[in-house]
Amino acid sequence: QVFYQPVVDAKTGKIASAEALVRWFHETKGFISPGQFIPALEKGGYISELDRYMVRKVIECLEQRRKESRPAVPVSVNLSWMDFYDENMLEWIVSGLQCGGKEEKKMIRFEITETSLAAIGENHTRMLMRLRENGAKILLDDFGSGYSSFNTLKDMDVDVLKIDMGFLRTTRPERIERSMSIINTIISLTKTLGLSVITEGVETKEQIDKLTQMGCGIYQGYYFSKPIPVDQFEDTYL
Ligand code: C2E
Ligand code: CA
Ligand code: CA
Image (cartoon, rainbow, N blue to C red; front, side, top):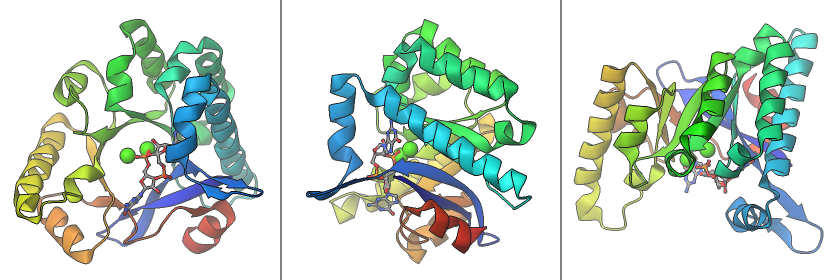
C-alpha cells in the first residue's frame, strides 16, 4: 500500500508536499517495515518493480485530483540505486514525464539518498539529470549520513536537500549541541547554493523552534504526522 507523509511549511502551518512511502500488510504476519523488506527486494533484484508501482500510483492520484479539479501538492517517490541500472525503468519515467500533463510533471519528485547517488556511476547519474531536465525536482535524501556528502553536492545538481534525521537522534544527549551546529551549517550551505531544505524526523516543538531560528522552514516528522493512507491524507490536508 502507498502511504503519504506530509511535509509542512512551519511558517504558515500549511502542507507543502508529501513523501510516498510503501507499506506491506502481510495476511498473517501483519505490518512489515520497509526497513525489513526493501533490502530483500534489492538483494533479489525486484526493487525497481516496486518503485515503478509507486510512481504509477502517485501519478494516478495526481491525475485523478486534476481531473476532478481538486487541489494537490507535489509528492516525492523514493528511488533505489538499483533503478539506475534498469534502463527500462528510467526510460519509462522519462517518457512518462515527456508525455504527461504539465501539472503532473511539476508535481512528481524523486528522492535519492546521497549514498545511492555516490554508488552509481556517471553514466547513470545522467539519467537522473534527464529527469530534472524534464521538469521533475530531485531531492537529495539522508544528507549528511554518507561518506561523501559534500562531494555529491559538488558534482550533482539537485533541488532540495533533506537533512538526515540522525542529526536529531543522537543517543548521547551531551552531543546534541554539536549536532545542531552541524545542521546549522548545512542550512547555511543550502542558502549559499540556492537549494531548498527539509528537516526530516522532527518530533518536538522545541526542535522546530531551534531549526526555524537557523533558517529552516519546511519539516517532515511525527510532530506533524506519521505516514498515513492516501485517502486519509487527502481528506486531512487537501
Ligand atoms: P526514508 O526515505 O528516509 O523515509 C523516511 C522514514 O522515516 C520513513 O520510514 C518514515 O516513516 C520515518 N519517519 C518520518 N518521520 C519520522 C519521525 O519523526 N521520527 C522517526 N523516528 N521516523 C520518522 P519508513 O516508511 O519505515 O521507510 C524506511 C525507508 O525505506 C525509507 O527511508 C526509504 O529509504 C525506504 N523506502 C520506503 N518506501 C520506499 C519505496 O517506495 N521505494 C524505495 N526504493 N525505498 C523506500
Ligand atoms: Ca526518502
Ligand atoms: Ca530520509
